[in-house]
Length: 328
Length: 267
Image (cartoon, rainbow over all chains, first blue to last red):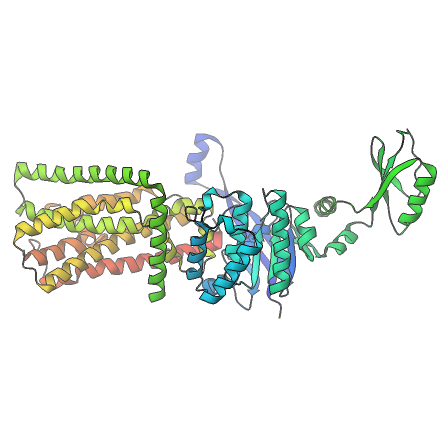
């Protein structure tokens, strides 16, 4: 049986409307008008143990709502949610002792305490056996390179340091599933790389399932095997990153840097000019119609080329296209 | 249960250490509190200096009741800071952090902070109680001493229950209602005097409605050996503090309803 089973999840929020101004505020007290938002509109998916899943979508699409349901802090209006054989909100304490959650926006640690004391407190809250705690703690301190942060109160840490400590804190009790909600937001490049590396390695060594929401497509490219896209409360795409790319378009790009700034570079009839940036031209082509080799041969024979390379369309563009396809 | 007590103690230790990170601020607030509460107590002394007695109660008897009520409130107040700050936690979403930890929400909030400076409120209560006890010629039997303890526990439970109820409202309004402060702070102001001085409807409200008077006034009578001008039997005066504990248990049930509501609305 799958580790996470989500079927036809529905969640509507009632949002009260209020007219502007003083009079609106007063009228709001007497009679409130509401409109409903379908945060989740029939979401279904299942996740196997050990998967690395990226969960993306525009703001307000329902990502956080899904994560909240899965972490047991929000009850859906309808649908099924079973995680590790439990319904999260019905067995909240049992459920949360088997999952780890990292919110990029806020820390799980105690603001005024040195990091190591937060860790010790979590050991007692989660009832982690001493030996397991010591092993995990020492390993995370070494791998995440947070030795120097341990005696520092959390409020004095940099964001990158704090996130690494938060990650360690979420894993001390060896959870079966790790939820990461926009973990790399605002992180510097070095911290991001270390963070991603750690997640991948941790997943390989322990087989922990990881579900990651993010707006950073590099996170997805580096970490995830599978990408689910949610838009307007519905899952609009679910598959590997390659499948996703193929689904949206087969198009690839050849970027050519010309020697001179010629006015009309010659482009193969089966390809077309996507955009031009001075001497640099981007040629769009479908590899089923013309191979990259042929196109390169044509481009170099017809133009004076200084440099060239083939690239996939940026993942952002792919995703943006899926959002747009859905909207129309 | 034992494990919960253990984790509660751990929470409190952590909270104290965190407060000690800001020593200067702590000392200043502690000093401020002491001056304010001492001022309140002085006001009562001045009052009695003029009148000498209050409808049959002498100054020591009033001070005794005043002591019990204020100690009860100080204990409850210091232990429920987490619930006091709860409205903000709902607004900022910090309550989610509580929910993703495998412990009861009430336990985590109670352990959120033990506010040391609030313990300063204990001082006037303790002074009043000691001063009254020394002058009242009390019979310190084992039963009376335990009744005093139980009375403070019952009073603290009742105040804590009120503060929990007040916090529970935040699940619906996302604002803790200031109105509820009339019950807590107002309750202290009211019940620190013998309740037979009030009009019957007012007295009844604090005896049966919000039984603040019940848990402190009646046991105090039993300890002082003073028959109740209102005529309650002695056995009732002994069991009265249990009502406070029952009230707290009831409040925690209402709290659970609030948590369920929060889980289904997410706001």
